[in-house]
Image (tube, rainbow, N blue to C red; front, side, top):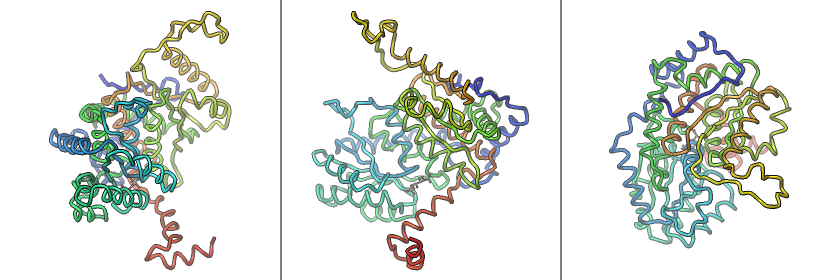
Length: 443
Ligand code: PA5
């Protein structure tokens, strides 16, 4: 039985046989590799292609880093960052950093912004800890992680010497190309390869995600097993109604075609906040092109009901909502009785907090549906490495199907180059002389 259930009973749509056939055809296209962007379909069968040796190599390297460092700085951006961040947050105790005893190294992230303050504060914070780094860039030339890595590498070399630093740096990059690959070869860093046919936003189950997660103590074997089971559950030939990815892709495209242009992904578990961020990149970069695409937004609930709730309930009716609903929390906390009951909460005494959370979720769902916001629910039994692995692959497969239903190439991102050209021109990067002149005139 599938670990993840999709409920579209409150989405207000009927998926016609024609739409079902379209979704099935889109899924088949991902498997036959005959569709747009077919050079980047390595993720489709990635989970089942991960061998015990692959996992052993990742965990051995993670163990080597753990043995040397209390803090590991993981450097990357976009697809080379969000997957590891999302899974790590989902798997971690929310207050892990306050625990006096840390059983695993603390994994911090850098290179996902160009903030001088963030960088300075990070370099300051790690001063008293033994340090290692995982630097991740498929192209090997991305500006943000390159800047962060230059600084972290210098810090490691100051502390441990060139040789010592080389024992504490692992590079995850292209097998042959790019500045990072050249540097890693020259300095003798251990490296892991990002396959050519796996784009950044689909790379969480390659060493891009697996290495930092293993270093942080996440059970990557269970993560991959969850993804493998979901690969089977969404394979070509699985009937439409049994394939949650096909169902989700069809539902969201029907909603889009009926004028719902914005999808809000929400969850009542704050640990899933970065799963939302990962999802936003996956869907935004894959579908937002050629003047088309559902705009992916996100909320963390119930917190955002007190900020975005008004708009969702009552604003422009171009929204639909997808909720990741988690059945069982990992902990048990009951609301206590209070003799004075000044807060009036004694009617909840003895109830678990999760029961209140569940009633909030059900109440919100009906209120939003009544307010014209269709609701899709993704049900997970619990949050653990296995279920999160399944969730990641579920979303990836649905994204591929959905992009084809929308009629775009879900595996390119031509739009992300425009800002880079301007930034390089403004920074007077060699080779951009003409562009520098032109952009100055426009300022
Ligand atoms: O999904 C993508 O392709 C992007 O988000 C990239 O992952 C991101 O730009 C980082 O690229 P790179 O890994 O080449 O440094």
